[in-house]
Amino acid sequence: MKNIVLASSSPYRHALLSRLNLPFQSISPEIDETPLNNESPDALVSRLAYEKAFAIAKNIDNTVVIGSDQVATINNQILTKPGNMENATTQLLACSGNNVTFYTSLCVVDTQKNNHHQIVDTFTVGFRDLSIQQIKRYLEIEQPFDCAGSFKAEGMGITLFTHLSGRDPNSLIGLPLIQLTTILQELGLDPLGEH
View (cartoon, rainbow, N blue to C red):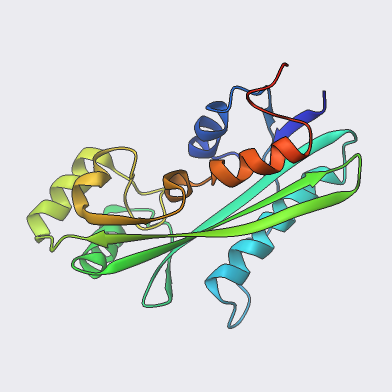
């Protein structure tokens, strides 16, 4: 069986990939994640997932490397990870009453066959009209300062939404598991198979 490497240090992606019950290790890729001038959100996440996967894949054989990246956008403007309470408050005020679209990319490299599969999954979240008190209370409880969009959908972030729309709710957290499973099956790594 081929080895699997998740090209990420994200605890969220690690937890998601663990759900497939396949043995893997996580290695943090060292890449520059700065957006290029006029780079669209889907082009940005596509490029970064590719660079993350190949940064690891170039150094190992007989391995499947999984790279992923995500951005949140409102009115086609990218929302970065807020880093602190003030930035998170500003982001959630902008999200209040609006739709936020997440672009989550996946790049899976098979180093044995020297090929790769790549997709971008989109997921839209509708936000409730939120008061400043609700926003501050949410941020105090969950402190999602390392999350694009300033919330954790797998936690209390769900209370901020009116609706979710997309193919795979896992994409919202950071890794499109439905499409990843399909790709892994094509590579002979079936989560439901013998291993």
